[in-house]
Structure formats: C-alpha cells, structure tokens
Image: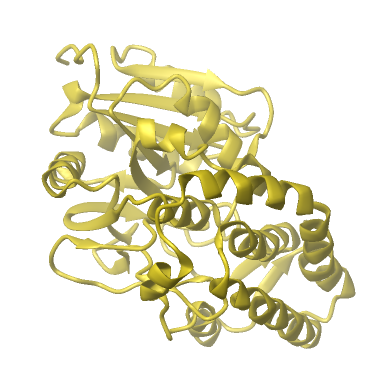
Length: 350
C-alpha cells in the first residue's frame, strides 16, 4: 500500500455500533478505493457489544492511513461523528455508515465532481446493498411538513437539498464553521438539519450519480434479511427521535414564513399517533414515540433559541429563498409504500 499524503484529501469517518455483520466488507471496499493514498479512514466505535470494535481495530491496525477510536460509550450518531471529526485531517469529511460498501472509483468520482462544480457537500448514488437497484440520490427538498422529500434518480450531477447521512461528504472547515452535527439530536434528522444550515449559510450540495455506493439501510432496526430488507420494522426509540428531531429541525432553521410548517407537522404527528394507536394497539408506543417526543421538544426550547441565534449569524438566505426546495411529494408517502409492500409495521418496544 502506498503511503498516504501528509494532508489527505478525504477523511472517511465510519461510526460503528454493533456492525459486525457489515464492517468487514465496508472497510475492504475502502481499502480498494482508487485514490486510497489520498484518504484516511477513521473508525469510531460507540461501545459495541458484538465484538465489532475489536474486529475494526484488527482490520485497520496495519493501515498507514487508518485510525481506530473507542468512544467508551454510546454517543449516538451526531456526537460520535463530531468527536471523530475532530481528529480528521482531510479537506473533506466523508461520513459513512458501516452497512455500506463502495465501488472502487466511488471516492475518486465523488471528490472530482465536488471540486469541479465548487460544491461544499455531496453524496454518491446510493444503491441497495445486494444489487444495483436504486435507493437514493438525496432529498430534492422538503414537504409541507418540513420533512425531507422527493428522492429520485437522475443521470447527471445535480444540486440536491439533502445528501443522505449514510454517505455524506462535506468540507471539513465548513462543517466546523456550521457547528458540526447538533449533538442534542443524537440520531435521525441529523443530515436534514446540517443540510438546511449549509444552504442557509450560502453553500450548496450536490449528488453525483457516477459515484456509486451500496447501502443496506436501517440495519439495527430491521436486522432480518441479511443484505435485503424483508420487513417494515421500527422501534419506540427510533420513532421518538425521528418525531422529536423533525420538529426541532424546523423550529431551529426556519426564519419566518416557513415556521408555518411547524403547526402542520404537529398536526401530522397527532394524526399519526391516532393511527398508530389503531395499528400498533399499544399505548406505551404512542406515549414514547409521540407524547414524549413533543414534551422533550418543549423541554429543549432554550436549545432551540440558542441554535436560532447561532444560525442567524451564518444566515445568507431567507425563508423566501429556501421555498424553492418545497416539494409536494410527501415524506410519509415512502413509508406508506413500505407498508403496502411489507404489511403493518412491527414495533420493537425499546
């Protein structure tokens, strides 16, 4: 293996938590990258219990461009990635899920395009783990509830509102300037929040279909089926964070007119809670996923105020400008399609 440059072009950050099933293939695909001498790989572990931390450390121990970090606790997606990013040296950070594998020229094509068009953030084409079927090229915008919407396939490099968090490239200095991921979110909606702040601050993000990556998706929440998703499963905790954080993102980032989506999102959550009570038939799920999510959002009102002040200092674009990203295809439409395909969602009480 060639020695890496003193200053790598890309710092790949793989945050691991119980990823023993996926980690070896993910790291092997990084080692096979055409621009391997220009990257560093940082694997950060959130105190896994499946021995995947030891596996990761063993795999990259001999890599001249490899770093292993044991956080010693489960910091969640946001803070786990933030702490790893503090050790990164690359011009770009590439936040990569452990349930992914990259085609050999993925990072080469992704970095070439992002530099050619002068974008600050980017993502590759995300295909399903086991084949070449389409999964995502990011969200084109947000719906009337302020949730990420309109994931579609296109042929050429294009601007995108939100790169997917499973494979998110961003300039390191801009990531730091924007305040990194909001650690209060813990997990879910983190890429939506970061992307919203990025566009508000005058930057842009792109999707690069020529760069290809494969992603399992929801590996911890939907463990059945190996490389293929075979069920529609969620958990009390996942829905808590997803519901709470969706509202937090809107309340933090919207300036004036787009704040109108907050009561619409609140109404959506109330309607969903009623439907969930009928479908799931468990009050504790509704309590945790909806009532507790709204109460916790209220508890975080000081954090919302603080973040709004910080975002105001970086803001270069108004709500009126951001309305170009409003899309009529609803975020929840994709969940409806999954329910049609897999049946009523199964919920893990955790």
